[in-house]
Image (cartoon, rainbow, N blue to C red):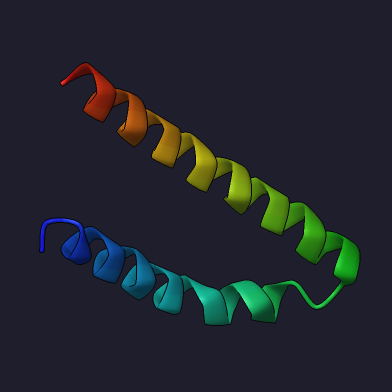
Length: 56
């Protein structure tokens, strides 16, 4: 249950952000650039979360 709530929260945030993200990225080059930025942000957040769980 403790892992389910953050997953539901992340899916909710994704559903809120996704429509405007797709709307503003009609050009393929802009879409790929913005997608890579979001993937980087998500990887950084997950890495920080993983390292904090390793320490604790």
